[in-house]
Image (cartoon, rainbow, N blue to C red; front, side, top):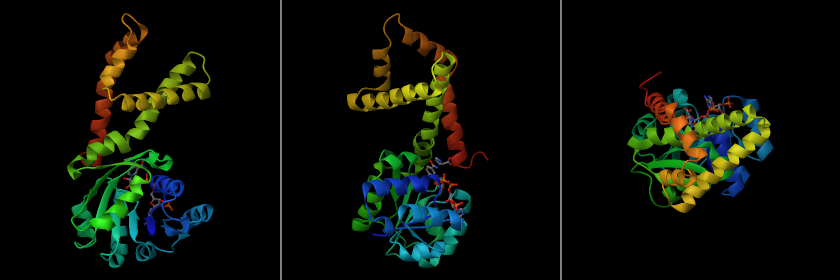
Length: 266
Ligand SMILES: NC(=O)C1=CN([C@@H]2O[C@H](COP(=O)(O)OP(=O)(O)OC[C@H]3O[C@@H](n4cnc5c(N)ncnc54)[C@H](OP(=O)(O)O)[C@@H]3O)[C@@H](O)[C@H]2O)C=CC1
Ligand SMILES: O=C(O)[C@@H]1CCC=N1
């Protein structure tokens, strides 16, 4: 099984590192090409991957061709590799906002295609990836394609109509959670903790809270109620955060993310 990456930016690197840790395939079975020769050659050299001179070479020499470029250049890149995308291969897209129908239109309608929306936690086996397949991807080929993302975390098969909201509350939310951790850590610094100590405390608390929520099977509201002692400190904090617009800030951020990914805003 050879997995080729077209583009080795933040997201592709997270998947590649997750695959290497999971030992899904030998390093040399991961083929890469990107815009800058020095970049992809150095990266391939560092991790024992196989560099390719062109995008077309990646497509010709891989069983699974992962399109990992920004949406604005996806069309041009697919035009370059289209001739090599025969139906014994699978096109795997991680590109936000490009539908299965559009991917088929830009390649060919016989091609097996897996559309995904991963997040960068894939690097540490903690990814959350939305997946949708077209009618040409089935059986072993589908299982193998999905194994790429199962090796790097959880997957969720979703209708494409829900990809924008998934992208906002998962792909982008990695950044929003870090934004929250950074805000907590700055508050810690305000009261005298070092940035390093405050960040570690806030990050471990975030991690532990997510883990406890999932293990308990309770709703977030139930967990909040367990922490808010009657007449205590936490309820005072919750009310002050809400007065400052915590819930509506988060929802507005998600609205803006969805509007951008669906082309409603520039
Ligand atoms: N970042 C994230 O958390 C997530 C990203 N995505 C999706 O992943 C895709 C990539 O995003 P991200 O990794 O953040 O972006 P980056 O800008 O980090 O990476 C883009 C990559 O594309 C390469 N590239 C540019 N032009 C070409 C070309 N003509 N041929 C081949 N490669 C080219 C760049 O090459 P070089 O490095 O040599 O300059 C770079 O490696 C996007 O479509 C995004 O929607 C999806 C979910 C999460
Ligand atoms: O910011 C972006 O456009 C990509 C999509 C989801 C996460 N990062």
